[in-house]
Image (cartoon, rainbow, N blue to C red; front, side, top):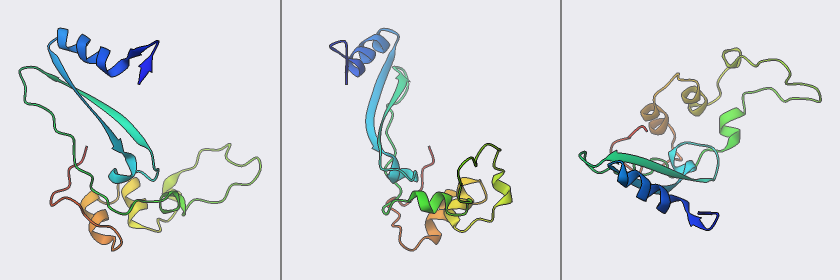
Length: 127
């Protein structure tokens, strides 16, 4: 990625090295970590030179979640709706994923109860 003709990550890496940090960068696919969107995001992690190197987590989800998985329990909005705050506790969850989104189950429970999903790691690492 360039800004004004300069590679941003390369520039950041050089500047952080002067401060005693090593940068690690990687493009991760959001859908492989439980986000119902097919988007790549760049993650940059800085580690002090005197500490161990950073390893990015491996994907934990094979079959991605959909937006429907996430919000199918919410009411359909009509014109001029949505001006009030929606209290999520007022809506019954329809899936383990929706329970996970509001903190009512762990990631392990979520992944183990979904038959269509393949757990890629023996251990689930939460970021």
